[in-house]
Length: 471
Image 1 (spheres, helix red, strand yellow):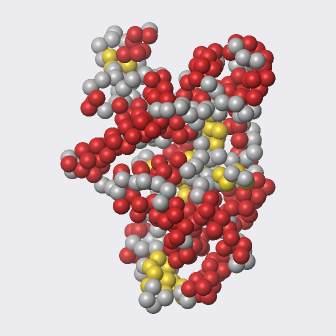
Image 2 (cartoon, one colour; image 1 turned 60 degrees about the horizontal axis):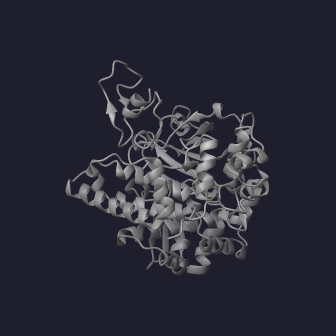
Image 3 (cartoon, helix red, strand yellow; image 1 turned 60 degrees about the vertical axis):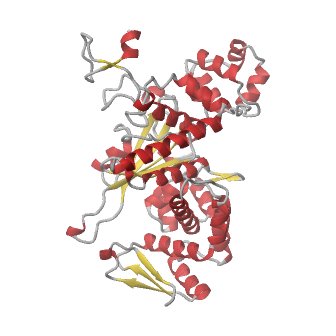
């Protein structure tokens, strides 16, 4: 099987410029012509395996630096899977795993799928907490990420409905109520006790009545109305998307179906063309976009992460939502940014600092282990619970993009985007992070051999064998 082509010209150019090399100087060291290197950096020619290895060695970079987002995700997943004691061996050098992903991606994906099924069954037999239906959630999350969090057919259908019906961002809640009444004969009313039952809305198809929680915020009500419209009108388009993918269980299809319904709802509330143009005009200022579209901070952030229409792309963002305990409730990515498969996320991520600054927007430059640098925007979201005893949920969201796109946003103001030392070193989480010198590490990386018998004591109570042999 042919290895997939690697188009990583932009990343190569950034690394070359950081090293202070001209295009001609690097071309000489790589043994190619300057015009050939120029074509690579312009994304017109792929990086061959030989050139990738030479460039990584000359620029002192891990070869994973040149992987695309899907390759990087799969390589990280394999590293975590192979660290399972089941395999009774070191999980293998990163270069070996990356070579497998590049040379036999279908085999690597098959192994990861098989291991995940095994791990899910093992957890179920042990009656562990992981026996809860987390495996289907993970499967759907990976599928959404493999699509770069963008489903064009649903996006265009939502946009066509918005524009065709003459909806307006300023009156959208009333527009959607009227549309449900006129197109489907469904009346909408507030139900004061619904939230106490743990329900946001309830649709009675026989009575043609939609009941919404009376305590709902306007932006939440808009989304729920759009969600119901998606369920009523988009079944055929959603099933067409699901026929293109193979999941392991019917439950997974149900979760994927729900994800697509929600996707359409978000696309109807924030129609692609209008929102894309407004985002660029506002320099991706989330608060300005909130006011313009009457949406919540979270809705705007999530929608920004989906702007990947081929003929009208926005900035590639990743998006995540987490609670104060570190549980990642929602995540998606149109970037190379990687999330850990096991264990909690990195404590240096600014999304966790947001909980001590509720309502404040925090901006961070962060460097991941593959030397990519991201601009991260984080803030707590959500409202009070309506009463003291309701105990509102403490959650925060983070939106991030690589610094090559950051200058297009208002959040880059005053930041030294070209200074890698100004970026905080973060990782996907301690178990999956390859950094060995982090004083914030809580547990060793998966699969690492430990040395506890040395005469030295570092900032963590153990050293990795690689550190000892290297020193």
